[in-house]
Amino acid sequence: MEASPFLANLARDAVAPNAYTTLQAMDQDQGCDLGFAADLVLFLTQQVHQRTDVIVHTGYITRIEQQESGIYNASLHEDFNATSVPKEHINATKIVLANGSQPIKPIDPQLPELDLDLALTPSLLKKYIEDNKITSMAVVGSSHSAILALKNITECAPDMDVIHFYRSQLRFAVYQKDWILYDNTGLKGIAADWARKCYRGTQKIQKVKLTGDPVAEVNTYERYHHLGTKTVYAIGFSRSNVPVVSVRGEAVALKIDPFTGKFNLPGIFGCGIAYPEQVTDPAGNVEFAVGFFKFMQFVKKVCKDW
Image (cartoon, rainbow, N blue to C red; front, side, top):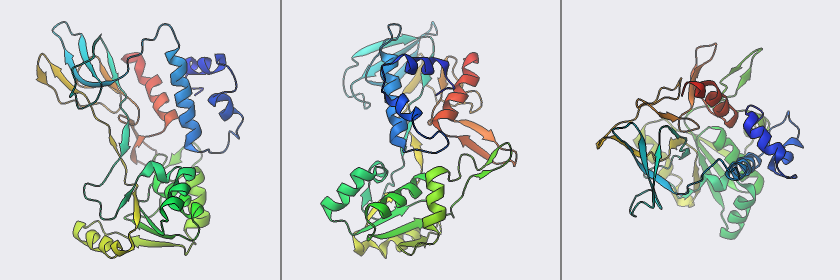
C-alpha cells in the first residue's frame, strides 16, 4: 500500500485500530492469509467513499456509449443482465475498467463441485465438512489456489480421503539476485512452504496425473465418481462481465494494450486482475503481473499517460 501515497495517507488518518494497523503489526517478512488483505481493501474503499470529492454510485454498468461529443454515457442497472430500466446515467470523459475476475467453473463438471472460495476459507471449510459429513474431497489444478485448497482440506480433516488431479507438476518461484524466476506463476509463501514440507512426501493425498485429452480425462474422473467426491476446481480465473461498449450505436470489440492499460478507444483504460500488465523476465518468460501490489505499480506507471 505504501506504493500509493494517497492510500497510505487515508490509512494513517483513519481511526485506529483498523485493517491497516492490523497488517502493520504482523511480521513484514512473512506472508499472511488473504483475508487480511481483503479486509484492507474494504477498509480503504470505505475511506475513499468518505471523501467529499468522491461521488459513489452503486450498481452494474452494463452499457457504455460514446456520444458524438466524445463523452461516454454509462448506464447503471440494479443487475448486470440489464433486465431493469437503468436507474441512472453517468457521463464521463474517461473510464477505467477494473471489473475483476472470478474462478473458472467447468461447463460440465465431472465430479460434484465445491466452491473455491469456501475451500480457501478454513473456518467455513471445516464447518462445511463436519455439517455435511464429507468423507472424500478432490482438487483439480496445480496453481497457488489449488495448493492452498489442498492444505486447508488436509488440515481441517486430517483423516479425509483427498485426491489431487493435475496436468502439470508444481512450479515454484525461484529467487535470483535481482529478480524472481516464475514470479507470477510459481508458488510462493505459505503455499510453497507447505508444498515442499507436506505435499511432496505425504501419502494422504492420492495424486492423479491428467493427460490433457478430454476423453481420457472424463474416463479418469468417472473412476472416482462412485465416491461422491466433492471437488474444488482451481483451474484459473476468467475476466468478469464487461460492459457492452458502442460508438454512436455500433458495438466495438474492446482490445487492450497490456503494456499501457489503454484500450482501442480513446479515454477507456483497464487495470487490476482483469487487465494485468504483461511482463518478460530476464530468462525470456512472458507472464502477466498478478498481485495487488503489482496492480498498483502498473497503474502508477501508466496512469500519467491516461
